[in-house]
Image 1: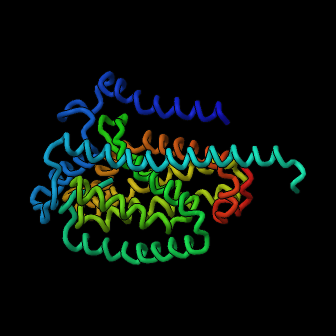
Image 2: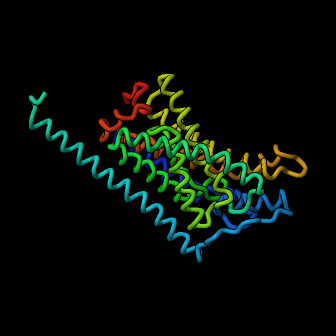
Image 3: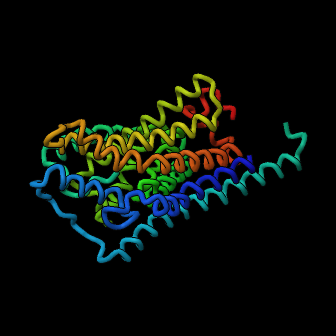
Length: 110
Length: 225
């Protein structure tokens, strides 16, 4: 199980890092502007080509003041989630350990 | 998969909101009932929600040269059933729409439909199907999370193609265009999401075996890992 987990982590890192090297190397998607922009923005551009007359009819109520602020908020979102997962992992591992200790100390409990 | 604020025509925006609303109400009801019956599962539901928070904040590079993010709703759908993930996905999308100008209020219904309804239901359905055919837990979890993620992005492509059919090629040409942007970009990310979900499930079965027994959806169908 531990080996499987390590392999999984390695695969995820590879899947994430490989495109960074592969895309410029093969020259995919380099023609139209910046590399590694958001797919959501690409879709927005595609809408503009399919329906050039389309007018956005509602603006976001609040836009992050800059790209930095946006990344702050995304980091906050990830940190909140990671914090909860870390807390659970700590609890789960400790509880598992205590359970096993309890079983070892009272072998005739059942 | 976020359709930007104001980028769905009014009738589509209203239609998708109306389509998502009953699922949201049903989902809230389902979560409340599950937690009343088993308050000890609160923490695990929190973990499932946290997983969706983390994964949907991570914008990863993909082979098409653009970035997108996983959804993370597959895990919770397997543990608590697809309905439980509707409110969770809704909260994530609302957070991003209000604070990040990522997605939007007018497109919230459509985005909830793709990420919090189609994704979890596809993941859950595939998981049950795979288990019924006796496939191993890891394989089922991977396939469910990975294809559920892809289904979300396909749904977004369909939603946009429906709202913006190509003037020459109609719906099909448009679907090809949006599908190319969303679905193909998503393939490596969906694989990553599947793998990460397997990782969490491995941890769960190792340290939380007792808690998992209390989840009939997950453990019921021969939950022996």
